[in-house]
Amino acid sequence: MPEREELCTIAWERETGSIVYIDQTLLPGRCEQMRCTTVEDLARAIRRLEVRGAPALGIAGAMGVALAAVRSTEADLGRFLADVGRAADLLRSTRPTAVNLAWGIDRVARKVAMAASVVEAKALAVAEANAVAEEDELTCRRLGAFGEELFPTACTALTHCNAGALACRCWGTALGVIRSAVAAGKDVRVIACETRPLNQGSRLTCWELARDGIDVTLIPDSSAAYLMRKGAIDLVIVGADRITKDAVFNKIGTYMHAVAARHHGIPFYVAAPLSTFDLARTESEITVEERDRAELAYCGDRQLAPDSVNVLNYAFDATPLDLVDAIITEIGVLRPPYSESFRLVGNPAHRRGQGA
Ligand code: MRU
Image (tube, rainbow, N blue to C red; front, top):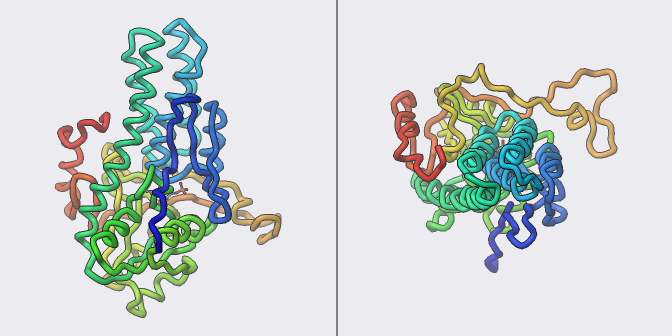
């Protein structure tokens, strides 16, 4: 298969002072770039999952603060900072679970707060937002190189949701590890769970892997355990939206794969950058996003459930760390006991350049 141009999910457009991104709700039918010129537009795009995936949300948050800074017409520094603060609050309120969003927002907001003038604040905001995006690519490549060493020379990997180029700036976390393993000459086949109800697996993971010529097979979420029992899966690898002291938050359905993997003696790996770690908190302190009933009760115009029925539509779940065999990061592979290996994450030396 001929090499395809690498995807770039989200970028700052210097000429127009705006954010350009691939609208993921249109995939796999159409791959179209959209432009955001206001923070309100960006907030809407995040809520609609046009931009999604934890690291991409981190970049979107960072660029959103830069957008607010660049577009503010306030000449007075105090009023300018108030403008930027309101934009940061709006962006922060869009999705509660992926910690990267707040991380990206805070990182640029901190730079803005250091400026001595409005002009300086605008320049610092754009530079920092671009740094967040550029580091994300580097982080994914590093993480991929560490993670691919866990893959046997020939294997079938199950993944859930989309932790790929589309969830980051490019390359990906879980799919980045898969890409790195393929690039290292390994024979990797991917089983992609469809990821009901919004189908990030079938729409996005299948699209981006097929585009790269990586062997991918789509399954309904509900057949994962049966395939494990049949010996058809060698390992599970997923991304993460937040890693607390005691759990990994990721797309709803991840936990059931972890339970099934442990039952069948299959390794369960998580790939995530340090910006996804939130080690000051525990599972019980985290808000898990609940989404609209229509996502389950309808498929397009077709009604799938009676109007009278209650719907519970959690977007994420939490997998306790004792089900996780390794967490792959840009500083290396963390293994249990995590109470010890997490000390590396807390080491500021490793977080330099990450704004932490
Ligand atoms: O609701 P989404 O599509 O934003 O959920 C995304 C996921 O759950 C991903 O697995 C996670 O963000 C990791 S992305 C590298």
